[in-house]
Length: 322
Length: 233
Image (tube, rainbow over all chains, first blue to last red; front, side):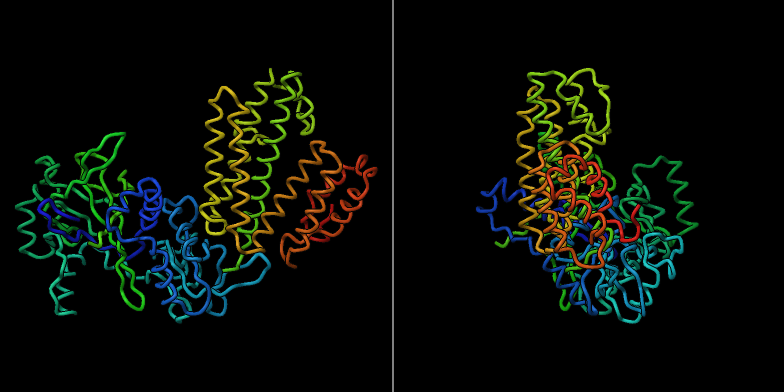
């Protein structure tokens, strides 16, 4: 996100199944029709290559077979995206009951009683539900033995199972250090100043400054488990301090960055709202950053929470080539 | 990527059936609407086709129910919802553009309910359905998938034509179309027709005289057309 002083900050990483690439694509299609002049007069980089980038990424992980996108079904909040990306990447959109494992190969069951091998699976369900024989046995949306096929190198899974470890907000704290250690480079973009109460110095700072920090539960996502210290009463702050002391690894604390406000058209009028940017990075043979992204904004004038699961809206993101 | 699951084949078939049901029901209701200008109870015969009694106080109530009442399984609204239900899980097969015409049709129907001139307000709906079929023809490259949709469409049209007393000539023409579709169905798929039932329909529809006395048998046979051989009742 961009702060009011113009500085950009990384707020979190999402390496599991981030959604939202399809919304700027749809928005771009519509706005090019509704406002061609805006595109004629500005050098806006065309973002409609996302499906091509995704297809290349899928092909890079393909172990021999068709491309498939695994969805939990039409009642999932991101189902539109699953079907839209399947349409535009020319992949088959599948649910678990259409798939089966035989001789350590993943197949799509066809209506003639035949089978078609799947070489790469872009799964849009969480790790723990992927394979009931390896993870949650009660999962009804997974594929039994999928992980065996994956371990044998007979199917590519995107994003790779286990990637979610990087989404842990406790790991986020270490990412700048990882960049320095593994690449011997300084990060180009900075994290928001972050404290991990697990460390003594950080614990002291957090307890002393709780009322001006934002506290995040490391295991939560989607805007849940986020508490702003200045929203808490004295009693609640005290209670929270005790919880942090008892479970120091469970939380991170960050300085509150004053997001840049962006103009939003809401109920016929232009208003200013907090917004952030979800950038999409696709790693295949090489790593590519999509020249667009999902700009998410808060609908509530007093809120920093932009997640769509909590009522946030979205805009297309224009990257200018000039 | 030509692989079709059982679930999707079923969806493709019913997409064709429900969209056609919307179209033919709409056309029939438009004609009935015209008839009720001169004869207010002109809709009663239509109810009879479905074995329904006239529980509607007026032609206005009848049309409201058969057009807009989504709890009436014979209504346009009900069939359009079912068509959309099938279409929305087939986006990658039929394309977003094709699906958008079903969405437009839903919007037009909803708007029409508020209109003072029902027939006039429904005219765009017919155009949108034609556009939907144009998109199917243009956007679905996989002929096998397209044929499943068309099988559904043709079976539905034939069913409604037979059920609602369309002229023999129209029924025969539609049956001829169905025969062409069925020839393109691959073996060992759920849309391979049951030759026993197919043979009976062919026999009845082959003769105007026979059709006039045995159309109800042909209608029952049509319901069983895709039953596996040996499952005949």
